Length: 242
Image (cartoon, rainbow, N blue to C red; front, top):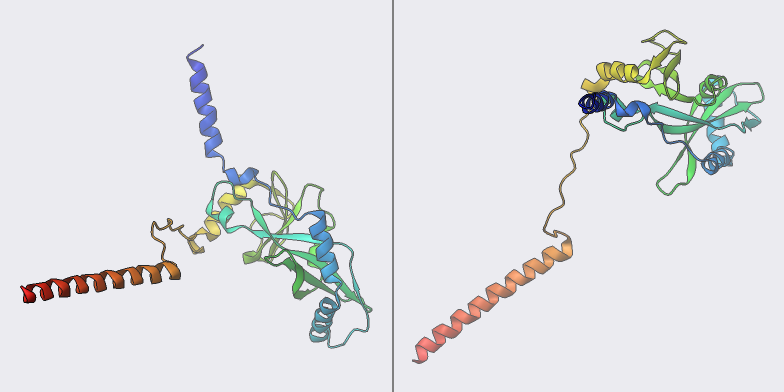
């Protein structure tokens, strides 16, 4: 019996290693202050002006009033590293926070709000309709809205798997739970070959090739050459005197 314990432990370790690490990692979610900042940005005059432009282009009329929803919908997109099978990669990464704008007739547009490098939220684009708001209305509390853009697919992403809500080209039955390891295998088969390889990290150089260092090295080389020339001239002068 004692000799079986190491074997059992080894088998358990092998099973754990064979399970994709990405399957158990939840996507990073925006904090309540982030969502509040996104909502505030969606309500700015510049944002409603962008929404008016969308309504004008799509419906041919210039709305007189626009109402911005008080609900923010974090929207995730399929993670390329998850597709590649990178250990620890979540299935989705935050793409934007969706906020619905509605005109007085009832037309909808979605403001896509994103943060910049400094953490300041602003509207970077507007799309017709309110898909994100309507699709997320019935999500379970532990589910997130995930987009697979290649098939225009929308999923409910849960800790155990994905449930297809809608797609232009359904790759799985709508409403059926697909476990995350199986979903990872599916998207790997569909897209991994077309992904660009991740950038290879370059090892830090032992030399400092910044501009001051280059100038310093050139100056040192010039001084060394000048010193050698002076030394040579002194020797030749000494030989001539002798």
